[in-house]
Image 1 (cartoon, one colour):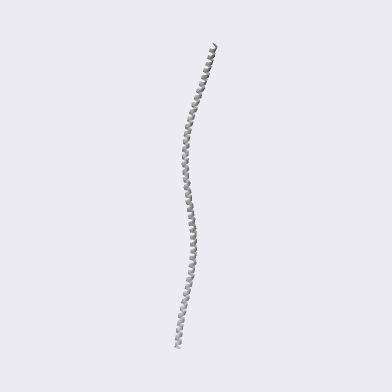
Image 2 (tube, one colour):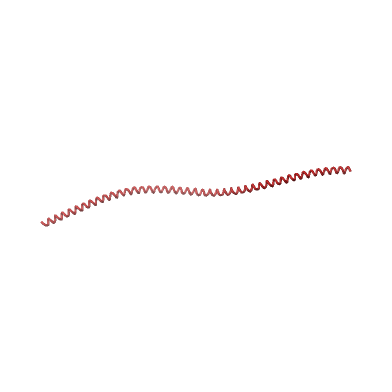
Length: 154
């Protein structure tokens, strides 16, 4: 009987030990389940963060592509502006040269107008002299004709 008692005591002790161990394992299992739940929640939060980061990355990449496109357009417009400025400078130079030639032509035209005026004045004087001489010639011819007719009547 003592052996049974010792065995029963040992079994009871063993049951208590095992019960304590089961309780400990159940608590450990509960802690592990809580940790799993916590980690699952953290995983969901991290997945959402990854999605947000991917979305931001996609937006940033699109903005960078758009910026590069704007940069290309900007370079094109800058080059076009430079060409237009060069063309405007060339047009200004041509305009200045044309204005200078026009001024010189105006000066020459004024000079030639004065020459024409002087020649017209000379012509008018020569015409007046011609008319005076023609009148003198006509008067002298008449006198001569009158003289010849007087002589012929004598």
